[in-house]
Image (cartoon, rainbow, N blue to C red):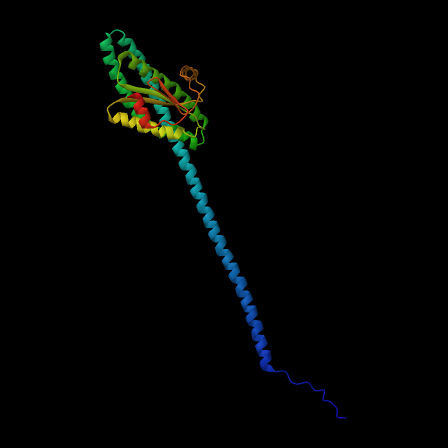
Amino acid sequence: MARRSSKRSPRNPRRNFIIGVALFMSALLYLAGVLSGLYANKILEERTNTHLASLKNETEQDIRTLQEGTQEELQHLQNYINFLETTLKSMQLERLFAETLSQEQACAFSALSMQYLITQLQVYREQLPFRIEAYERDNELSEEYLQLKEQYNALSVQAWIVARNQHLACGTDLVYGLYFYSRDCENCVRQGEELDTFTLSLQREGKDVMLFTIDADSDDPLINIIKNYYSITAVPALIINDNVYQGRVFTANQLKEAVA
């Protein structure tokens, strides 16, 4: 029997070369993937940090703007209160002087004083929050604001009383009133918008208008007495020339028809 040869066949060098190249390329691609992944993560991290820094700066700027705006609104409210307080004291002295005049002279004098008050009120109202009821609904109220508002409420009611007395005593063509709102009232902002339209319409016709916005939840004793006297039980509520409108939104046209 012939003996089988035990000699192994020589390795194929070309095959070994191909395997080596394949292993090298695999390692290279793996390293490239790792490095590209690290680079992508670095870019993502940088972009994220940049975005967070930008968001932080924008937030801080928004907070500063809100604080500045709030302080400005408080200052306007304080100026308005100071004006009302000074004017009411002046009008008390004017009434003493008017008592020395005849009825006709007293009414003429009172009309001049009231016209000055109306003009000055318009200036201050343009500086106040566009609508106090809207401002309070959309902003966090500070203790300082609440204290100022209580003063504003009290002085506004006093100014309304002066206007009412002048209208009744002298028969002036004055539209005077109070607008009661509350912070949680759903329709109060819309009623305020209708009231603005109503006021502007009357002013275009040459009529004098004195309307004051009052917080229905105020603890002021005089405000509560007025609410009880006029049976104010729901908001939004209006007292215009002693007529009461409450519990729903009244349009500018409806109010004009009522005071015509």
